[in-house]
Image (tube, rainbow, N blue to C red; front, side, top):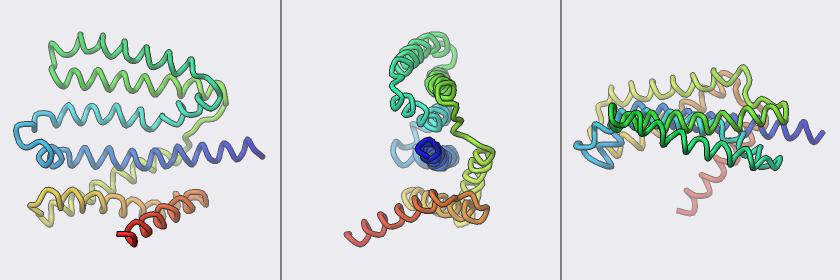
Length: 212
């Protein structure tokens, strides 16, 4: 029925959001130094710690973002407005408290807490309104697979000892994505809908490469 199809689409969308955001988070954490050195050079290395803290906040908010979209779908825009205003005010207050003592790290902590709240409020309301929980027992395993994929990639890039930052960044991104996809297939984490998505992504990429 329509409700069953809607749940299936919601689960699949959330799952792929978790897959992509988890890969992005762990890659940026383990390669944050390389990213900062490539884009901003050595004087900005102290920004690595605040960057990692901030990434965690964006990760949590990103994972929960489908709940926000669901609220838009069921016309619960007031909840989105209230949660956004509350998170902004919370961020301002936390910045005033934390920045004097912790500087950039304090600002990152304040933003991370605010982003987490911005993600959790829509999740709670969407579950209450629809009785749909977008996560299941596979969710932690999917996150762990992303972490393992990144750890393997980090080990390999350290082993090979590539000195060119751009090559390290490009190869590591490709490696994390491929290893993670292989793990998802081996451990049977992909359902029919997921395989369709993988096929469409592969088809789109092959088309772009052919056009070039």
